[in-house]
Image (cartoon, rainbow, N blue to C red; front, side, top):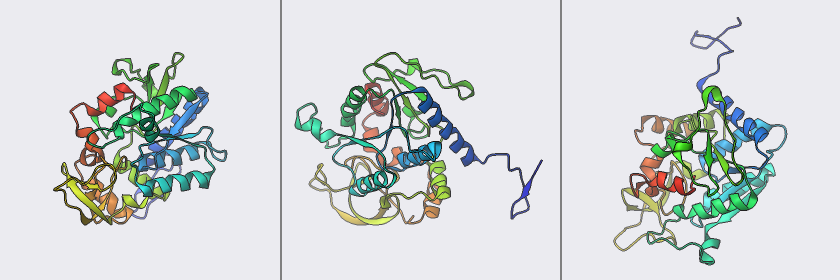
Length: 311
């Protein structure tokens, strides 16, 4: 057996995959399995770090050919401008097909109503499920990870949705030996999670190894924010700040990005990827637990949204 020696003198077996290599291999396998099994897949792409890593893995899975399915973004209308610019730049750079479902369109025609708290994250469900139905997508790739939230920890890699895009945890299928069951009836579809077994730290270590570009708001920067519900939120037309909420300039970064009305920043000096990795390794809160107000509406907030068709 051929062996190598590291700089520390430790013997390395080149046939043994590292932890990150194993995760990458599993995710690439999932993409290829799904592409071979489903006729009309689509990849959810918001410009957030998990969807960026998912796209990077998909590009690897099908190289040197292009990705054989489109991207889909559900735009709340309250997205961070930096993230939207990144999204459009990446789509243009790789010549990808992007479809956008806009929450604002549904509000304008009366199909949805603004919430009193101003957040639009829960309003994404109808545009998403309607787009899946009208485009007849059979498989929808999402960046959900089991370490994010307890409802997502219940998901299988291939997660069946009924004809109303609803999730029933009792219909979860066993996935022994990485065998994935994509069988579905007409009108049903499967949500697929290539990053299911990754952690936030894994994602950042992979971003570091692959030298993946990210929107700048993931790194420490000065920003005008205000305090609400224990989080630093960005001011905007969505309804913040309210009377009594003071805007101040702080050095912050975002661990996750979504609707500005419910995505909080964290105080941070981590302006390099090495510092971000060190910060995450020391954290005892997931990024959603620390910075997503929509997950704090109730104990089962995420699971309730998933049952209705949310990702």
